[in-house]
Image (cartoon, rainbow, N blue to C red; front, side, top):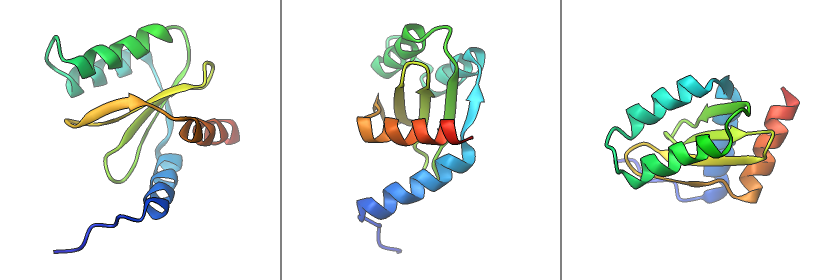
Length: 109
């Protein structure tokens, strides 16, 4: 069995590269469909947080990216907010360093 890479600098760089390559503008309808697929059960706290993020940023342009390891990000450039999620595992707000990276990616396109 291949040993797991625990070097956070290498993991972060690999995620940055794959997310830069995969980032795209995504519609609110697509995001809602993604949320239903990822969090199919009503009352799921992760579902509530995901859809709450969409509601809080209604009318904004969203960007979606996926890293090679399955981590996904939804970023709202206008409000400089974002969430990360790992399907069937968890979800959370993007931290300042990640937000800054996504701002650079979106503005550099």
